[in-house]
Length: 72
Image (cartoon, rainbow, N blue to C red; front, side, top):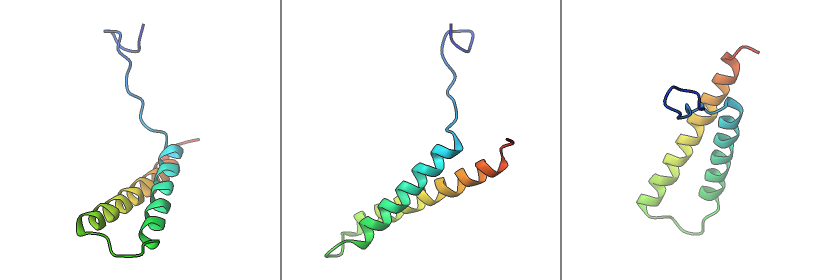
């Protein structure tokens, strides 16, 4: 049987280490993508790049805070 009464499993939260790794990878890839370009991208693409960079930074910082706050 599952974790709850009706047989479905509860969703486990993301581990802080995984969140840090995914955030760091997103930040690195976004910076590489933004720095290696021959011509300026369209405005929509530039907004998506900055949004991806901001999301990666939030995940990176959030994961680090979660790692520091969890007891060992």
